[in-house]
Each structure stands twice: as structure tokens, then as C-alpha cells.
Image (cartoon, rainbow, N blue to C red; front, top):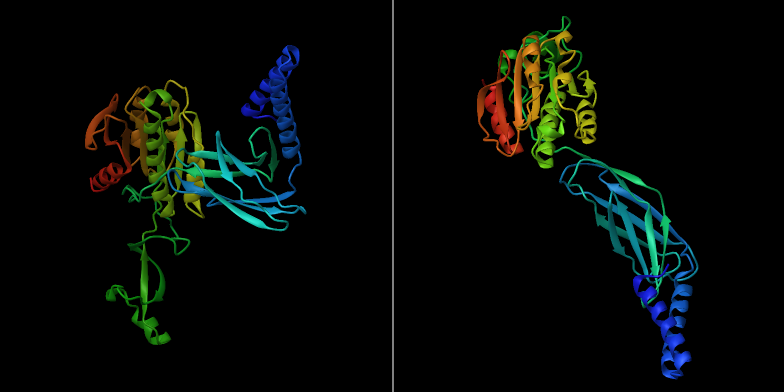
Length: 387
């Protein structure tokens, strides 16, 4: 198709040709014909489709919000002619990323690298790659898609948090694997001594029998449950950035529990989002689920607490919300007695970063941590952990 310059040249050439012949101005007619011929040559130049192979990879395929990611496309000239005047245009979400392509001789390959946008969470479609062939004067161009589409998953940012201590539900038969955190409650197994181990845990009978210094591995066999209610209502947050920070906070809390192989239940006002049992790569699954959470237009968050009264095991309830409309937060009062510990994170532009005890609803005295950044979350969470 013609570019804006090409359409202008075509229109000017037609007018000059018509006026020159009509009024007898030979120079004007000659200039008009030259313009028309230039457009015709440009179209013929750009018309042949280059025979190329294109392979794309995204490195890495999953990335935290704001972290770098890049697309890598390898173009190979599979035709028999040298290709010049090519430009690659990669579609990434709603953004077009242009990349210049050097001349490609027959059989030659060239690797294109370009940064991908990671400022917002979600699944970002990448591709297909479009190759744009233009004439030397930029009058005409032809675009053709190459290769397939890929997806970049932008996940929430997280910060390392400790797991809040709470009442514990114990396994009768102890832990099922060595993944349990070290503790001092129950004997789990014998293992070889590692520099720094407490010598009071040395098992002398096994040491004498094996000839290797063996120590008792003591573990905390409890699996504290963590329930996270994420308020996704649009009216609960002053800005989009506040909501993104709220998702980051929920992801940090969930990942901390999953990293310790503790069960996590994640819910929103529209219903449950994900439930993990404390095994496998739960942390990655939680981050993937939170990567695609979007703001809702519901008016109340009360529905997020439905069914929490019947949940067993106590544990910790963490409510993540904004500093806007608090409608429905009073429902915390009806479920708080079913948990050993309840905490609320208030995310918003007017946050002070301090931990206070405020009323979140009728009859509920819930500790609240005001957050404006992940750094403030970490500081406030540590204070909450020792409360």
C-alpha cells in the first residue's frame, strides 16, 4: 500500500499531468508523469514478498512487573536474492515495536532483540511479527506477517515476608517431607551433621553404629493456613497504581506462605481465586493467578467473606484493600473469630505506613497496616509479626 508520501505524490502527479496537458504547460505535464512513474516503480519495488523464516523466543517467559524482558527473533533469508529495505514491526499488546533489519544475503540469518513492556501485569500477546518492505523513497510499502504469536506473562512484584505466627493445626503422624521448616516440636528424622548444627541434637547411638556424626532433625509439624481476601473493587482504590500495589501485597503474603509449604486460600468479592494445599510449586501458581486479576465494578466486598465461617484450621486471615470505599469490610467482624489472627492491609495514596488498631466494622477491632510501597509493607509486616 501507499504511504502518506506516496498518496501525496500520486495526487500531485495526477493534478500536474492534467493541468499541464490542459493548459499546454509541458514542464508541468512532464513533472506530473515523473511523479506517477515514481509511484508505479515504488509499488513494483515493494510488491515482491521476501522469502524469510522467522523464529521468536521470549526471555524470560514469566517476569515480575517492572523487570526486564526481551523478545528475540531470528530472521533467515531462505530465498535466492539479497533482501534490503526491510523493517520488522513487532506487535506487543497495544504497542508496535519497530526494529530495523539489515541487508540479508541468501542463507544469512540475523537476530533481532527488543525490549518488551512490563509496566502492567497480565498476559501480553506478542506477535505475529510483521515485515515491512519499502522503496528507497518511502512511497510504497508492503507488510506481511511472519511466524506465530507468543505470550509474555507479567506477574506481580513481591518482597520477602515472614509468615505471621498463628494457632496451629498439627499432623498426627508428623511432616510428610523434608520441606518442613526447622523447629523444636517433633522429631522427624536423622541426618548427617552440618557445620553449625546444635551439638545437643547429636544422636550418639546412630553415630557409633554408622561412624558418621548424626543429628536429630526437629521440625514444626504444623501447617498454618493463610487466607487472603483481595479487594478488587474499582471504587476501593484511588488510582490504578494503588490497585497494582495491592495485588503486589497480596502476592507477597501468598508467596511467603507457599514458600514455606503452607496452604493458601485466595479469594475476592467475585469468589475464590485459587486454593493451594502446600505442596509442589504453589508459589508459582499463585503468582500466575494474580497476574491476570482485574478490577471489578462490584459495589461491596462482603461476598468475599461468604463461606469463610465454615473453613477449618484457623490460621491467618489477611484482607488487602484500598483507602477508598470501605463498603462490605464490616463482614470481617463475622468471620474473625474463626481465625487465630486477622490483619488488614490498607493500600492507598494517603497511607502513612504506620500500624494502628482501627475499627473495620461493627464489633471488629482489626489491626491495620497502611501501605504506600513494598518497602513499607515489609516494615509494617515485620512489626505485625512480633505483635
